[in-house]
Length: 599
Image (cartoon, rainbow, N blue to C red; front, side, top):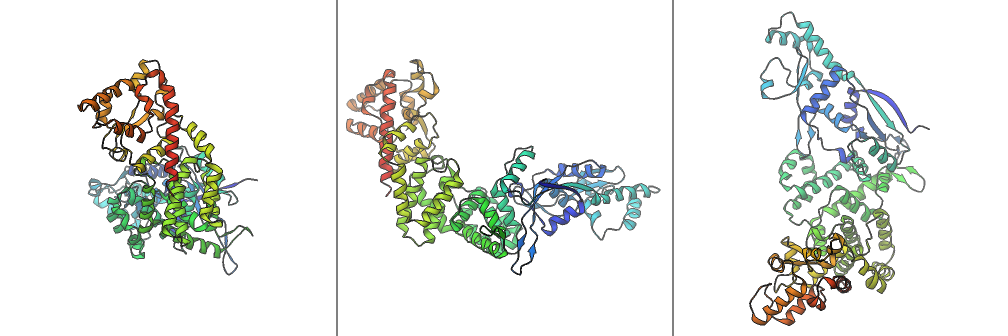
C-alpha cells in the first residue's frame, strides 16, 4: 500500500494554506535563509514556466473534539519551506522572519517591457519602467485597465499597450501555476517521516522529533501553543544574542502584551555560558519533568491528543498536554530555577563550559532539579542529589547512547521510588569497588583530552582547590578560567627523541597537567629527573626557576594535588609506562574521593 498521494495545487492555494494556518513549518526550517536574489530567480522561473520542484507535506492525525466531532489535523511542510515562504514574500507581500529574527519585506521588481525581474532598490523605485513591487499586481484592488494606459503614457510607450498587457497578464497567471505536492500518509510514524526528510534533503539537514514537536506547538491556535513556542525560541536566542532583544520586542508586541517577554527578559543580562540550551534542550527538559516521559515522539502524540490506551486522539488530552507543556517551559525559563541550577552545576566543579561535553548530562540534571522541586523536597537535599547525579552520569556515560531511553527510565524511577534510594541503588549496581579500582583506571587509559574521565579529574581538582603543576599559588581553577594550557609531565619532544613516537602514547591523559606557561617553558624538553633536580636546587638555594615553591614538603604536596607519584622525581623515558600506570591509579582514587565528598 502506498504511503503517499501525489497531486497538484496552485500557487494561490499554497499561499492560502499558509495564511490560514493550515500548514505548519518544522522548526529547523523556520528562519528564512534565502537571499533576495534567489527569490527573484524563483519568480523568474515561475514566469517562464520552468519547474521549481515539488513540496512534501505530512498530515497530523485528526482529533476527536469534546462534542464528538472530528477536527482535521494540520499539515506539516516537510520539504519546500523556503520556496513557499519566498512566494509569501514576493507574491502575497507578507513579512518574513530572517535568521536574526527581524521581520522584513522582500520586494521583487518587474519590467513589463523587457520581462525581467530584479530585487527592488532605490534606483529601480525611481525608474518608471519598473513595477517596484510585484505584490501590488496580486492585490484585489489592482486594475490593469487603469495601470496599463498610465504606465505606457509615463514611459512614452504609445502603441505598446498590448505588449505591456500581455506581460502583466502573464505575471498575474503565476497565481494559477500548479506545483506538485507529495502528501505523506498520516499513518506514518515520526521516525519514518524523519527518515524520508533526510533521504530527500540534499543539504543533509537532520530533522529531529523536536522539530516536529515545535511545529505542532507553533501551529496551535487554541491553547497558546504559539506563545509557548516563542518563549522557547526567544529564550534560546537571547542566551546567544542578547543584543537582539530590543528589535525582537519591538517586532513582536503581541508576545510582549501576553507577558511572555517579561518572563525571559532577565536572560539578556545573563553572563554564564556553562549551560546554553537550544530549543531541543528546552523542549526535552520541559516535557520530561512535567510528563515523566523521556521520548519526544510521545510529546508529539500527546499534543495531537493521543490516548495511548484507546489509541484515539482526543481534544481533552491535547488541551491538557499544551497546558502542562507551557507550565514546564515556564519552569525552565524561570530566573530563580535556572540560576539555582547553574549554582548546583558549578558546585560540582564544572566552572567552565569546557569541562562538560554532554549536553544531555546537564539536561537531565535540570530535569531532576525541577522534578524534585515540584515535589517540594528540601532544597539542600535537592542540591545533593542533583550534584551527585550529574557526576554519576558523567562517570558512567549514562546518556552517551540512547539518551531518550535512559532519561525515560530514570525519570520514572525518580518519581516512582524514593529519590535517595534510587541514587543509592544505582551506586551499588554501577559504582562498586571494581568500578573504581579497575574499570575507571582502564578508562583513564586514553589519549583523548576531551575524555569525560579527564574532565572529571579536573573537576575534582577544582573542588579540592588543587594548584597547577609546580605552582606555589596559582590553582587549577584559575588556569581553566583564564584559558590556561594543558602540558605534558614527560615533555612530548623528550619522549619522541627517546623512541616514544606514537601519539596515543605520548598524549596519554595521565601525562597531562595544567601548568603555568612560564613553568612549562622552563621545563622545555627535559626529563622529569632533570627538571626536578633543578627544582631541588631551587629549594636549596632559593633561586626561583620553576614557579615559587621553595619548600620540599610543599613540592610533595603539589605533586599529590596533581596525582603525580613521588617516584616520578627520579624517572626518565624508561620509566614512562610505569609512571602512567601509577598515575592512573592515583587519578581514579582522587576522582572517587571527589565523588564521595558530594554528599
